[in-house]
Length: 110
Image 1: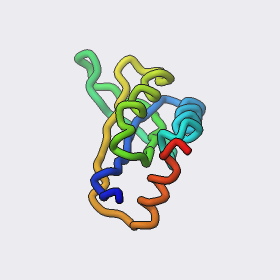
Image 2 (image 1 turned 90 degrees about the vertical axis):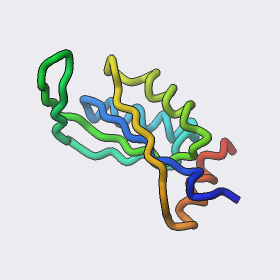
Image 3 (image 1 turned 120 degrees about the vertical axis):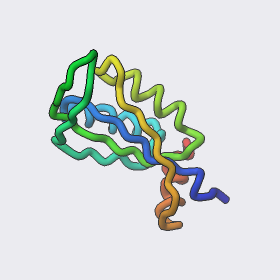
Image 4 (image 1 turned 180 degrees about the horizontal axis):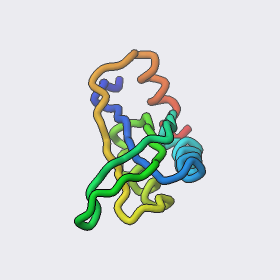
């Protein structure tokens, strides 16, 4: 039986909707994520190479299992257009048992 700590939400951002869709499709097709939500456009303000920058981006939020984090990160990096992509994993502290079980089922590699 899986525990809530066995699940993650992995977040990344990209500059365009097409890149977001491509990464989301790959993660779900490879069963590395049960679901990837795409939100955008959003505005990001950040410091890059000594300057304050801003950019329009699209945010991806992938629901997955903790055990798959390394594979999810590799997949994102393999198709991400940024030199230093945001890839942040947030533990799921609590969630619906049925939803978490679905994440487990959809990322099991069946």
